Image (cartoon, rainbow, N blue to C red; front, top):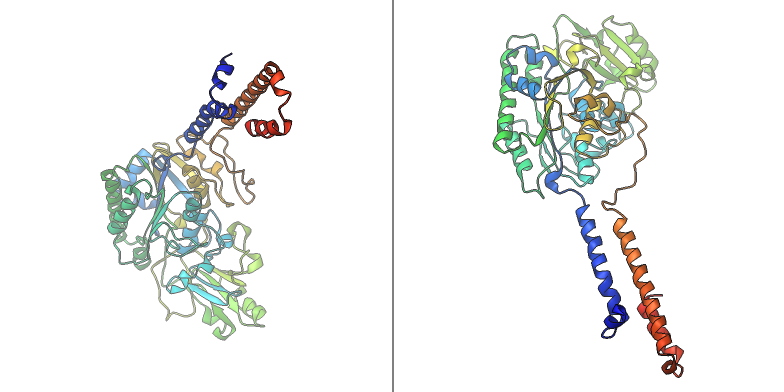
Length: 492
């Protein structure tokens, strides 16, 4: 009887809409409540690299700011970085989780025979995106996942890679002070929520430059190391002043360590092979040799047993644990000096008192690693990790799915304040990408469907009752006139 009284003053179609409106509204509300978290809810992460900061520098002089991070967070005592232990290869490994042979930045100086081009960190060749696009850096992945990134001088971050720059970045300029770089980073993290970055990278050239010029064993390095700790203190204070200290996860690391050299330990290639027979591609201590056409065997045999302090490898014979074979930019012959030795063509070249690039298992090549923030445990010391493991760790902190990489979250999950639900190592064969989450439940849809069925059932019963009640008046009515109306009302 309620249905009959309601329909006495309105059409069945209008009545259907009135009944469905609350269900549609409920579905929309449920969808909004289960949508993506707001920008302010996204985890924040800042990765800082002090170039050439060796693992043991923090114990050499008082480093209260490094100690503060260790007390409030984590320390990793031994970090095996990527071979070769040079600046550009390792910085790209940190943000891709890939060994150099895979990400393609195999040295600071490279030759690509397919492109017939040379790359040098000292020239504008670094801005050609073709050198970088064998991998995808984390800032690109963050942006494609809907986040925002900012980069202050990180190697490769001022290059358009796969069509993207970081949302905020600084063109590389070594004359820009550390303090200015920090101020930019703080501004990017502090921006309004629609513009604030979720992931930032910050690079500083020291103590690498001083380590090259002075040698890591020089007492003058003490002042340089103490200065780095002061700069770290400036960063921590700026984070606190901006209200970011407890919100931003902070990782402080480096690309490599530093070894002491001696002018007595020089290997001169001119003593063993003519320069006319090869092209010198990269610098000591790992030198890429490109023999001239038809000269491979002669060059290789001339160098093979030339000096006991220099290993000589054909490309296919480079030890597997270096992960340094499978790239066209790795030269046919590789020379590797023993720790503390320098390979030069002759002694007229520039000599440094400190260098890196040696075997990545050497203790002198290991970088520092400390971290703190809401994602990390407190006052925790881990024995060892690989630098490629940092990438899946950062992806986990940022709540984004990592791309295929050589690292493993399982290897570093103990650094986290809470363990992942189902930690899965992702080395060379990651699991397939799952379907993108819709962000809402199907329950409202099912509820709406059931509501529609109930209303339709009610209307069918009502129509039958009305038809039976009014049958005498309908027997002269045309079926063709009632059929369209019935179809329209019931959407059959």
